[in-house]
Length: 295
Image (cartoon, rainbow, N blue to C red; front, side):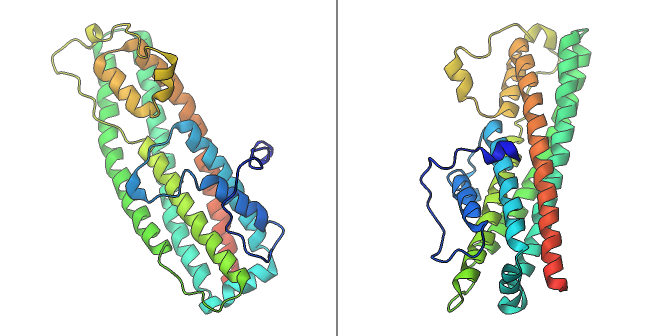
């Protein structure tokens, strides 16, 4: 986590969720991480903002540090006592319930990334060899079949995450509760909302429009060495490598498609690493909550 700890948080103005009393040495770090992530993830899922892969990777890394800091926070006996004693552990039980949905979404995203990577590499190989139309057409056909299945899975996960978002944002009455409990409840709520948003950003990144290659036409004749981007500025403005790949393939731009496949392959590697890390953090987080209820 050394690279994450060097993140330039200090120069950014923080919209603090803090309270006058610091309940734990890690509480201030938790605040900083939450406030760093909120600018990207403060809106409802209905806004469907599509982030680029670099931003999603970065947010996954920061999110993993957030969960590590929360883990330290939850190890405190005072923290555990405050959480477990509130309405017979309602906050803990809600967190456990939510963790099941988040773990399922993580697992689904991880599986989709793995299969997407296989199709990207297959397309790379087919375009590189250029032995005939059939090889590329078969790769595109398999890719398009996967796209249809992925679309259904992404839609299902979006629905589950949206329901969880609504439940998380349902106001819990904390009137007359101490500041420590109020602080912890806010941390749990905001961490859940940000995790939901980041997972949805990843799923949205993988959303793929259909490939529309005309039947009966020569695909090889369509794959001409056309420059995909007219300028560096235009290239920077394209934020979804998956969608860009579909556009390039539909237009028959072989050089642009191959370049995008290479870039997308690297992006998938980074996203796989990030989602694996979050999955482990969520499992660890869930174990901590289970242990609280067991004691």
